Length: 358
Image 1: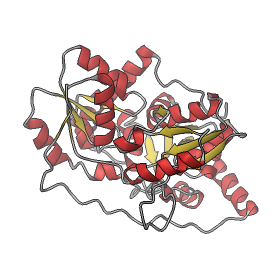
Image 2 (image 1 turned 180 degrees about the vertical axis):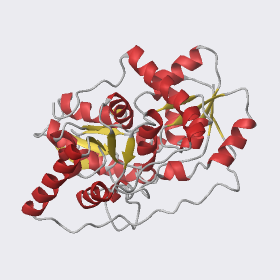
Image 3 (image 1 turned 30 degrees about the vertical axis):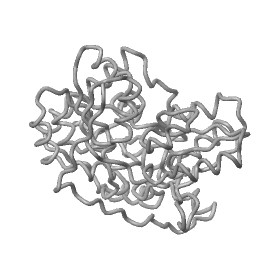
Image 4 (image 1 turned 90 degrees about the vertical axis):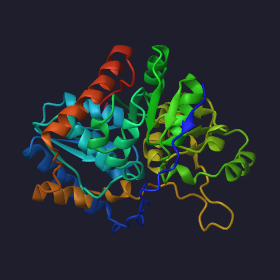
């Protein structure tokens, strides 16, 4: 069956992409002092730190050192819901903090910067999306986790890149037709692999959208022994060149377990911290994002992820601000499709990983 793109709505918002934040460079003594103070506050406030693979390496280190979690969005959601801590501090983008709050309405959920959003979220406004769903009542609504609480509340299933394939395959085998949002590249990849009947919302990630297939071909010629690792939010022409297509966890596992010594990686450069930690002897090359005449060879760094730093993490713990708040009824509706995803993952043993500093 063919995937079909949703005709581009005239009201689809233009996503404003902020410049990548710059933070003052810290000396080793300053970084240690910040980390020590944050550790102290985490303990005082019965708080646990949860960080995404795309965040700064110093935050990932601190999360692991304090018994928290560094993971993809699926494991971040699960880890937070299984914690006894009264406060979850989420280093990532806003939908990750909102998901933590949906799953744990009784807990305090803090983020270093509430303006750290996501282009996929911004490009799928709930009123427009709800109208689209109403036009196709015969379809099962499956949304990527990179969406607002309101969009999740309108869905039947929530998925992450690490679990999208098995869930959509399961639904397709039951004869269900899918309405997919918001990432068109991931949706097209899922449709091609599963053969599901999918109607696609026309969104895309501003980071992965920038990977250039022609430039990637040139880099592959320069590094013929390198394996190409691609996140499925990337354009189809980039995915077609991949040796491995998968979630952040899948790409880290590939670097760890494949015999290749070199890897060309098409996803946010923040993932290199964990890759180097897991496979210190491997050579990692950022996939090119530059087209002809561009000013940089690779700009694969999410500006919203860059809004997380030790400095504002300390600030939010000292002040207790930047708390995620969700309307109770909307949160209850959004909980249902997320719970379906987590239960499916549990039943099929998908995405389990070591936690904390292990």
